[in-house]
Image (tube, rainbow, N blue to C red; front, top):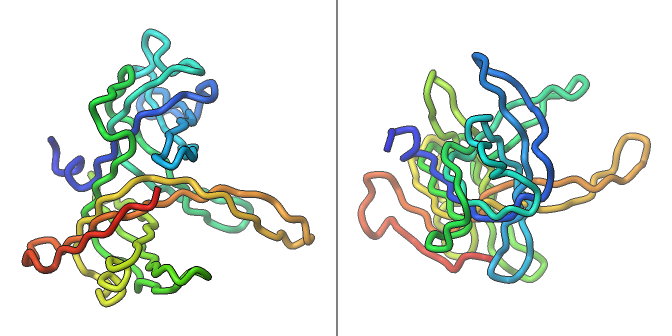
Amino acid sequence: MSTEMQNNLVTLSGTVVDQPIFSHEVFGEKFFDVTLCVKRMSGMDDMLPVSVSEHLMANGLFTVGNQVTIRGQFRSYNKTVGEKSKLMLTVFAREAGPLDETVNSNQLVLTGYICKAPVYRKTPFNREICDVLLAVNRQYNKSDYIPCIVWGRNARFVSMLEVGEHITLVGRVQSRSYQKKLDDSTVVTKTAYEVSVSKVSLVDGNPQDVTTDEQIC
């Protein structure tokens, strides 16, 4: 496995819910956007964006209704909308095949650097949360900037870390709907993508630096 994949490795198993839509072309290779419906243990659905190259789409694997398992990376890129730049997130598929029931249906392992001061808070139900933005290096001097949500004891642990700390996070990719009020007072429903973290560790840290908490499903 390449160093890049060790830093950023996601496995997803789910159902294709829409026809692939052409996205872009790089060095003659076409890439398509697909939405994958991934079930949580609670029965809720995460509707996750996946970027798939044309060579992974052989034999109609990404036909609507098909169940597939993919392995790849959770990536970010900036998209200009009007005069603003927006952080976009997608799962970049490197491998794909029919549903594999022997693997975790939604697992992500990231190793990177805290690039923004963690924000600790509590929910109305007094649940502890810490928001973390993780910079994960990849080839060609690029980095992916991944928003993560850390819960419970892990939230307290991460809230004490400083910008530049090198950490590994284990969790899952999730989608979350929210409402946003536009300048003309219109309210629209949007979808955010993030990592829900179940385990945190310091890179090259001592065993006591590792904390775990139950994953929210």
